[in-house]
Image (cartoon, rainbow, N blue to C red; front, side, top):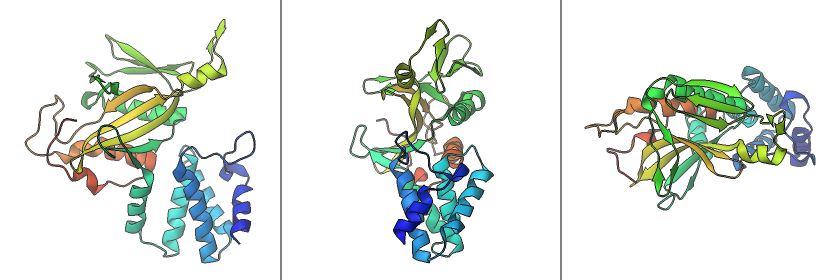
Length: 284
């Protein structure tokens, strides 16, 4: 039965069809995407229902928000499917999403950085960067953050954003910078080849939180190009620090609103109590 369900999943047509590479194989940009498909197939098999029941839910999830990342719609369809068949309650589903959505890696100390990958299509990247630089510009800092070098820049006025040839320009008045987030071709008289365009364009984006002494202490958004080089780090409002980086006497948890908003909008994740474990800011 599993083999038959897998065939039905892999041969779906229309907007619900699996993304495929040139060789016809399904494309999974992150490990969780393949796991979402596998879990859906196994759940349908366990319940003994038709694949059409799940497929109908998937189509409805895609139609509900066509801009949502394709595999996010799989998760939403799967969660509703599981809840309606009373395999798990909503609290349990939310808890599993929190665990499955991210992974831990080592930046300075063992497993100190928790990473939540998000989609890197132009629409998503423009949405994130517009939120950060047009609406939240007063409360963020930005630059690059690597070992031995940390840029923490603030805009002195509301930046203006514009797109040209796949590049987003963020104009801060006295200065500006460019980020390649879309299709990039170069000037008509000096075109850019596909390999160089791939290297320049954002290939990976993440929401991150850094753990120190058992609690998150900083929250970030990061972008990386096709070579894996860091394009941008945005430091999000910190509940332990004021906008001018002064330690606060008590955590102000409302300062996590932007972090919660970005996670909900782009990962469909609820607010995480783990974000509120700390009591003070600790420098890395």
